[in-house]
Image 1 (cartoon, rainbow, N blue to C red):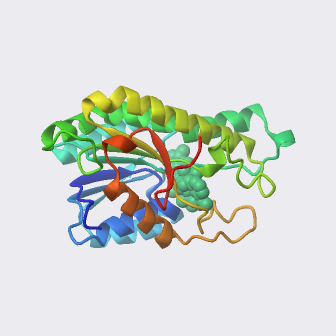
Image 2: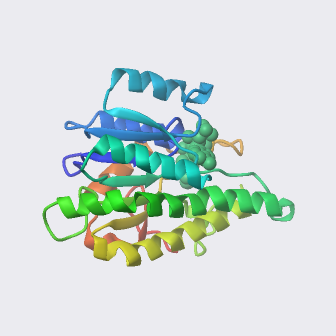
Length: 259
Ligand code: NDP
């Protein structure tokens, strides 16, 4: 990963699945980040055990209590991260936390539509708002004029399921609430790229592949992509993207996905 050198990053939903994989891969880099902020909504819970074990061995992992559907939790997390960073900024915000409900078109409800939208779409919006001062600070503190993930970036983990053009996997999973939330996340990414370009912050929506995690396997099929394969691919993509890629929708192999 020669091209990706970040001093600090935050990953939401870092206690399992792709989020945990991201933390593990950042740790293994030849020059690991000085700060890996691992957002986790229940740091003391059973599902955070692996992350806790990892953090006990690596002092550069800081577990941050973070419920992305709760504005107060997001604000508290931003304050905590700011304290750790002292005067410096945050290079990379990875909005990874997400949920799905295996509803069909006919069984979607107001409650499910709202819950999924709040977590998958509003969460990343509020996260970016709260961490904007730290991202701006990182951009200002980095040399060079172009945009890059080494400088300051927001990476929204989206899904090809939110692609209106592809309608990927409809026969396997209708998951309309999930698809709508990710289509909206894609639009949010575009808006962020337009709004934050002047601050030197790159914004991209990334599809991780169909990955072997709790979510990926939830419909009873074995996904083709391992967490390691997905994360390796995404980090390679993040190491190579620049100014021209802000506001785009890419997959873990770097291919552009049609909106
Ligand atoms: P998992 O279900 O394995 O993990 C989801 C993570 O998100 C967990 O850490 C979970 O925490 C966290 N999370 C969920 N809701 C919240 C919340 N409200 N606040 C804070 N954290 C929360 O999913 P994946 O690792 O597979 O998915 C990661 C991302 O990748 C998601 O955005 C997903 O939509 C996307 N994606 C995944 C694909 C796949 O095939 N796996 C395909 C396309 C996209 P907890 O343990 O507390 O529940």
